[in-house]
Amino acid sequence: MSDISRALRDLASDSIRQLRGAVAAFKDVCYANSLGAESMVLTDLIWTYAPEIEIFTIDTGRLHPETYELMERLQRRYGRALQVYYPDAEAVENWVASHGINGFLGSIEQRRTCCGTRKIQPFRRAIRGRRAWVTGIRRDQSADRALAMPLEWDRDYGLYKVSPLLAWRDQDVWRYIRSRQLPYNPLHDAGFPSIGCAPCSRAVQPGDDARSGRWWWERADSRECGLHARRAIFAEALAGDASAGMIE
Ligand code: SF4
Image 1: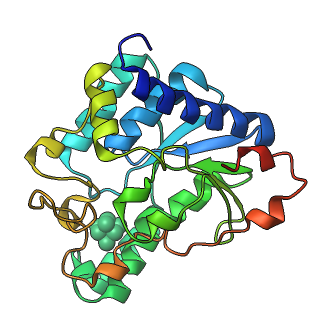
Image 2 (image 1 turned 120 degrees about the vertical axis):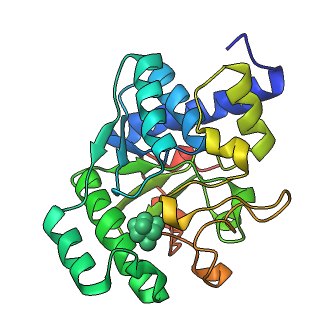
């Protein structure tokens, strides 16, 4: 990591320590790669320093063309491919038949069932049998994420959730990407701080909340896809657990 500053190197070293700690504690660890800017940092850290962690992503079928191109650029850079999970075809067909192709615009409930069909179900399949999953969330992304801990018991999915980038600020992520000349989604340069499905993410004004470009027609407190929707912190439950040393 001679190509990055001392401060950034310290931040990255701490993240690597958490990733390796997760592998040591849980063995079977996966990373749910959202293909956003933070994912470029985590992909670099994992494939370089903690390659035991399987990286997967979910193709909802509604992603931006730039996101598919990014998958290919990652493959070219690292010489290995992300594991891609897809929604169940019949479930998607049934959802579209019931709600229409863009039925997620109809109500928060319909949007959540679309995310459930296209994202949550394949996500559940991807983490099945695992002991821990890694996320790229950062504390300064939203009020909810500000409460996150590096290691949490994920009550919704029944495994540990490791968040090694919580202390990173947006500028740290971009300094790392630029210093290491990592590939990233060009939509970030067009004002997208957060990139999800094409119809549900858009550019925002400089200084706006990073999540405000996601499902912008809804209330701010409903803008999570479900993967990080309900926080459950059970740090005390980890006392005596092999993973306790990972808690900052
Ligand atoms: Fe459906 Fe939009 Fe959720 Fe993608 S982000 S799964 S298109 S509601």
